[in-house]
Image (cartoon, rainbow, N blue to C red):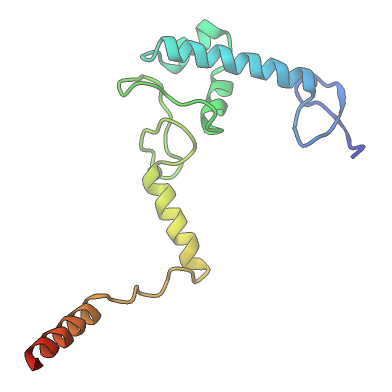
Length: 140
Ligand SMILES: [Zn+2]
Ligand SMILES: [Zn+2]
């Protein structure tokens, strides 16, 4: 509470409430985001430069919307290029492709010794159960 900052976008002083920019800039960004989203929705084949030109919003900003996973590239034949930061595969939103996300998640687990142990194998148990049942019926 009471944290006063300079808005990096417009330079105005504002009360910091967990957002990096001031309220009026937030509103501006929201409007810009809507503009981009609507354009992309209506023109799924448009590339980044076209979207930027049509909406008058910088490519950098559009990229940020995508990286923040607020915006998703629509259509499989889209010309919008967003690459996985790890393997450079084309992705639709966020920073990493699904494969790298999985990879990093399991790497993270390994690092902390979670999920590192081999899964207890079910096969032998099932088999011995079946054997038991078999001998049981045979005994009858
Ligand atoms: Zn501002
Ligand atoms: Zn990747």
